[in-house]
Image 1 (spheres, rainbow, N blue to C red):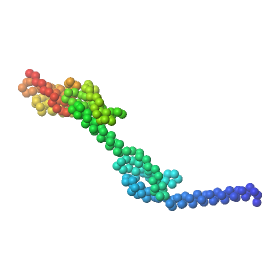
Image 2 (cartoon, rainbow, N blue to C red):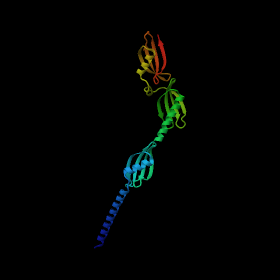
Image 3 (cartoon, rainbow, N blue to C red):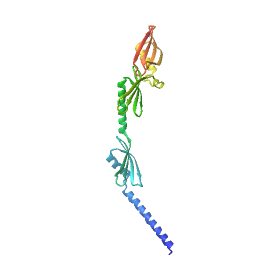
Length: 230
């Protein structure tokens, strides 16, 4: 037999042995590998939460799992053979959201203590909360520092077109409020600004021939004033 043929047979034999070895390794891994059900039970027991996703990675050597509990959402990588956790990373924190919500509530409380009224708009910047408050004295913008939760600025402002559209009550509700207060028949009703305060001016004809103008707060529905005319 020639030398080339001997080398060829030798290489072919090596390939066969190598293939058999690879198949044996795959079978061994599959035999040792935990099922998805088993790995879920292990992780849920150890880390107190619900598994929402499971997948094999790293040539079936590991599982990647998504776990969710009251603190947030986590990605966990665990051995497919033993179930031992290799890596854990938080993807989303519910605790931070809760802290942010509490901070916003405390900031709003501080703003309303500074300017007593109804909050009609809230904005959040990187360093502060901004509240638009309708009070009996007018419309105000109140800034509250995010770190200290203290009011840094409170100034009166002129209502914008957008803010005029954010009234808590409708013109029809304002008419009903005015009718209940003085009676008669509604002649006209318009949204207007009075000393920085948004009000509905409701004009009514009274049974005795007189006329009345009732000012209804556009946010609270409270009567801000009544004027009678002969």
